[in-house]
Image (tube, rainbow, N blue to C red; front, side, top):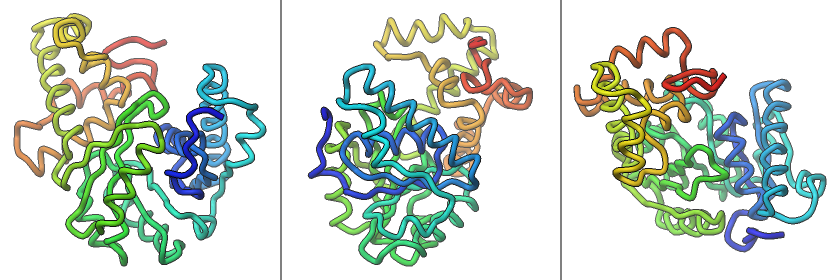
Length: 288
């Protein structure tokens, strides 16, 4: 196999949530040599998660990023609807939607099913790691591991260190991310961390420019891609992330950091009518 670094990632990894992000995280650990279990809310969601991960595996095989065949890789992957199946995992990454109460209840349930020596991480893109840690019994074994969408193609993982995150976990996260073939950036817990705070600020201003008729979405994106060498423009990126996801982050940042993160009315209107971006078929661009 290629891209496999089994000595630097945990041998058994759990992922809570098998949506687009969770499936991508599962895929990343899987092709790096871990045995991965994804836990979902029900059998239908678990089957959908299985299909997402296997689809990502098939694409990696087609592109020559890994060797072998799909059946062999799938032997190290399982889906479940039972938190108890996390009991033997060395690391569990939570990847449920960005809803505070859901995050808290999910993390508590995961922690209750982990061995005392296991590690726990959240994939939150903006919520307070310290705030979440305060809800847990073993905060020293908890941190943020913020993966980026799409996970298979992204080379970045933002490691978010809380005040009570232990030094051992700080060191291990760097090792794990390197083992995934990705690059870590380490930040202290702060609203929006580094990536979401900067990325959302740029995205919101681009949306305001569309709202004010300054330029078209395509021209704004081209200005950043061609003029500033961004790989994708801020509006196309908003479509990829999802306008609903970015709206939620913006509302949180507005509450924590002030009115400079107030979501434009255009953004609220688009979310209200279901123009969420790529996943809905239409956002600032038409994907139908």
